[in-house]
Length: 193
Image (cartoon, helix red, strand yellow):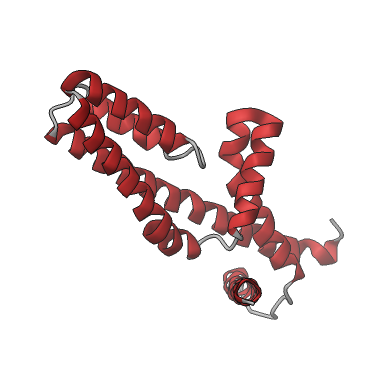
């Protein structure tokens, strides 16, 4: 990069990295919630291998769109084989409730603070990542899109004449967040029309 662009690229990279870290922390919290919740339900139902199935749910939570569903089906099958239809239904309902809590409570609260990407962009990035690289592509698609989105916004934002790089990074993050909120409001207004 040209010398005059070093500072801007440095700040943009830091802002992008901060977004990537926020995405990973948020995803880890959501995955822990899923794994612990299902493990508790399975322990209450006395399903064998409940901790292992909780770990499977935890790991499945990192695979966008399908991971939790596939891991949940495995839990339902194990519960059904061990304790019958009633236990399978209880586990299935618990997984559906968890999916709804994630979609309507956890994702908006946790992820909106760290990632400013439109839901359609997330779905398209997961689809594209899956087509291009299979499951690994699906795993890295959303954090990659979030990183690129925030970095490009930071590169386009005016660079403040702050005294330290930390102050510059904070000012650019605030500008990028304000721009993302404005874009989200425009999208919501267009959807309402």
